[in-house]
Structure formats: C-alpha cells, structure tokens
Length: 180
Image 1 (tube, rainbow, N blue to C red):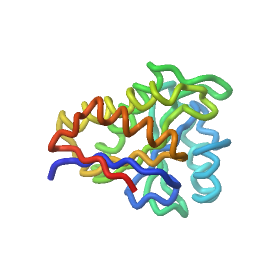
Image 2 (tube, helix red, strand yellow):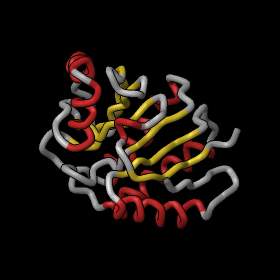
Image 3 (cartoon, rainbow, N blue to C red):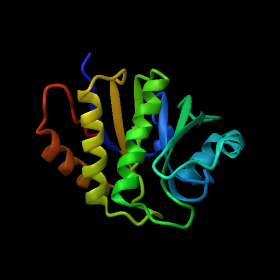
C-alpha cells in the first residue's frame, strides 16, 4: 500500500496514530508547546521515561511510551538544546532520525508537529520544506509507514505546509494530501 501524507490542523496529542513526534530538546525535558501538551495529556510516565534515557545528541530521536495518549509511542526529536534554537541541520537530522525510529518499531502511522517553529524560533516556511522533503525522501526509499501526518496548531501553519507539500510533491500518486 502506498504511503499517504495527510495535513491537518488540530491537537497532535489526539492523533489516531501509533506514534506522535515531540519537538524535543536534547535534555528531553517536556516544557512548553508541543512537549508541554504531551506532558499534560500523556501523564508523568512520559517524562519519567525521558529522564531515564536523556540527554540525547542534537538531531537525534528517542522513543518512549505514550502514557495516557492515544498514541502508543512518543518519538522525541531533539531539534534544539535546552534554551537554544533550531537550525536547518538539526531539524533535518531530527526529522530523519524520527522516521528511522518509526522504522525500527515497524510503525504504520506517525504524526509530526511543525518542529521548532514555536520556542525553537525556526521559520515555518523553512520548517515545512525541510520536514516534508525528509518524509518524501524516506517514503520513496521504502518504508513500513503507511501514513505520515502533519498535525499543525493553527491555520496559518497548515497553509504553509500545504503550499510546501504542493511544491515538493506535485501530488504524486503515492502520496495524498488530505485537508480536515
């Protein structure tokens, strides 16, 4: 079955997928933004597991259980150091490593936020381009993933990701953009 890419606005913590990706720092401290929502919805077990495995290298990704989340796993993509900023290189590597962790778990579905566009200070247009390009390249190289979602917090960011997807994918037969 060809993989689908789905774009929507909403709450990442409610995603009906096997794993969600956390926009993490290298210390794996669940602070504000996406990480704070994961901490709140997932409960203390997610942070406790992060404490056992962190810190991780910049651009790496680590997997924990999802606690009380709908998703079974959280993939923590370290796009920045605590108090630092996201760069194009750290975002590219964090996205790629998140996809590799999903493959290691043989996951069929995964949902990403716009990593680094909040506290990390990274421009949404560049974020969309880098993340979608990494996902398209990964899916084209063969993958267990059947569905990759980008669940974006607001309508403006969704529009940016839709535009980037149209430019990068030109709507190929093996990827589908769904707008909900």
